[in-house]
Length: 104
Image 1 (cartoon, rainbow, N blue to C red):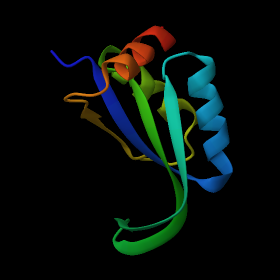
Image 2 (tube, rainbow, N blue to C red; image 1 turned 60 degrees about the vertical axis):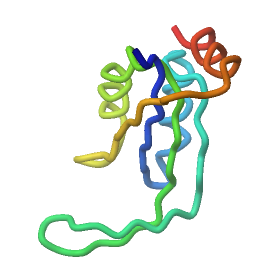
Image 3 (cartoon, one colour; image 1 turned 180 degrees about the vertical axis):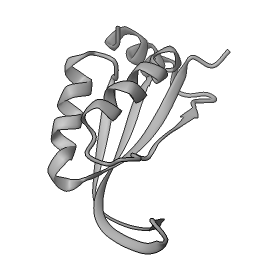
């Protein structure tokens, strides 16, 4: 069984630090990479939209995923935030142990 996941979350620039700090302070994530200047193009309410966003790449335990989704939705400004996850198939054993030991 795979125990770890990577989660992608996009956010408006003004909200991203609040999301990062909120998740880290709860110790439900081990690490968040913040990739700035993401240009997103998407359909919303029957029209094509474009926005400047930030992409968060979050590493955590798989068992915390449902809680993380709920927590992000509490504070994320979007009506339908992008929160998608991928299982980590394999990785540096010491790094995966660090994720395990860093989160609750």
